[in-house]
Image (cartoon, rainbow, N blue to C red):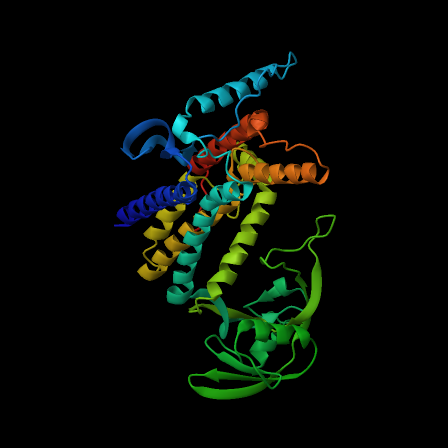
Length: 444
């Protein structure tokens, strides 16, 4: 049964990846057709065509390598400039390549394509087409997140006590909290106040607390100050006094990551501490909470992208050493499938929670697809958007100076960079796939 569940989880994720890619490309296809651009192909995957069908002027199909997809539109490149000469420099190869690409693009044009090419559209329409794919991934992630927060809830620390440390050493280091008391150890403030696992704190410092943020914030401010505390145990309301101890705790950013200084040392702050942990529960949220949850996930993904080269370097080192993969590092589609299989196979976790994990993975996958495609480098969508914006700036600047319209920006000039970026993306994919096969990320 465990193996079957793992296989089911992997299959679900494979289908989810394929559907996410297909909908991403539909995000490009729909506005292109709305703006009357002739679309010749809508393909899922790359390489050899496994299956295709034609509807109207567009061929729809599936290719052998399921690592993406594309929508082929007429007139993506401007025509070659008459009389343009190829440089004799070392860039000649790339110039020839760009010219050949323009010729190939021009060869697809027919007499009926007048005014229907991608390059003939206003810049704002081209940007809408290119942002359509990432926008579709955003909508998918938002819908899934809304389902999760309203139906399954969000894992939220509550004012219910999960654990209480009986004693703590004389040091104010919170890491020194312990369950077994030594002869010279002092009871923790929480234990001394009578708190036990299962209690629910309702008031602190005579102020009602409804969530963990309120309670922990109040505790942090009351270091070395005797404070009234009220809690409920088995339906009975109890009161006591508690004196939080002063302790050094790491400073955390909005993603609960430790803040470090210029030398790499973790920055700390002095706060009150009582020696208890909060019980994490899934708390259902209003649908509007999906925007905040998704916003945090998008911000976190952007943060990962900014350190992606370092993360990939760490992954490469792990492959050559006995180290372990960073669970917060990047993974390939193979890694996502393995994680989905592990999540589905955890029979000690309720089925609903496993379903929520898979949905969360699918939402995270779409966030990653959106953010990654917004990187302003060709051949990614963000590269085309950047080209459109540069064209708009260039035309506006020429108009302000009374100069002739410089015409569309020729992205064929960016082919050398495109080749480099494509090579890097391919290398990254190969590295992560190998790492996910040899030293996979394990979350359970």
